[in-house]
Length: 333
Image 1: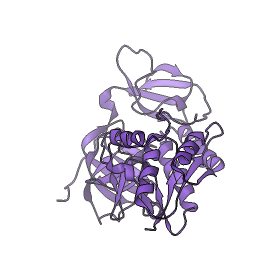
Image 2: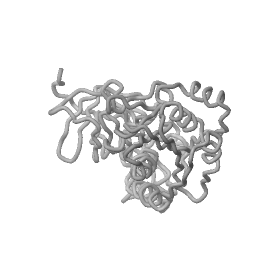
Image 3: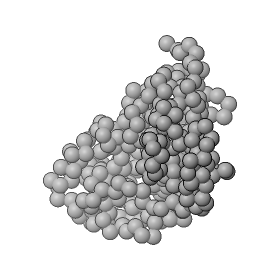
Image 4: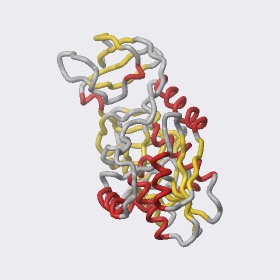
């Protein structure tokens, strides 16, 4: 690693703490950059933090790539009845990649993600409540190897306390919601039960995701979205038991660690806030097969499946399909 650093600066508390840590850790040049993805976003918060800490600041214009790689991609996923993960896509294709392209040979890339790089491997962040390694699982190995995540060793409270004690004027409001609206071609269709009986109508399949309960209306009992058919425009709903899957097929797998040959045991995480599930992993034609030891709820095609061994991220890919009640063979020891 070089003695100089390029820091991804959003203006929030985590990136402010990361910049402060970089200034304390690296003797060479430290500069900061803000990645612009939307016309409505402003670099003013990031510029104020950089100015307070006295570091050079620049703006990277990624709006065109963001529109193509994230917004249009997300709309295309929804049109196919899939549940996209724009944040993971943005990290891999826009935010980190844009900064990596302007990274000098003598620099490392520092960000405020709650994750850790140790021995060239991506690990979960220390603060389990804020761990963001799931969103980084689709980032190319070569990019991650040039990254450092100093906030990953801190709790959120510690990062905030450090930034506040230094008097840094970071943005107080955290960004929790999706930073853009996904356009979708809304066409009405029908709501059916798992037996195929039509029980209602909907205004557009892009408004639904597998596992959804809210906004479905009253059917005399609790129902959840079980599957989506974008061609026939059918939203199928059922009970919570109908959401259970024994496994899934993952495509576009981004391996951060070379996988073991044959079948091997790991844990798989199929949504950001989902607890990791023990699973058997196997490379197959068309992708990677994940077989859960116990059935998982609401495994949504289109979402990211991140695979871990302990705290190490082995890789991540896109869930292509979920399978019901898989029968397991002999698991490796």
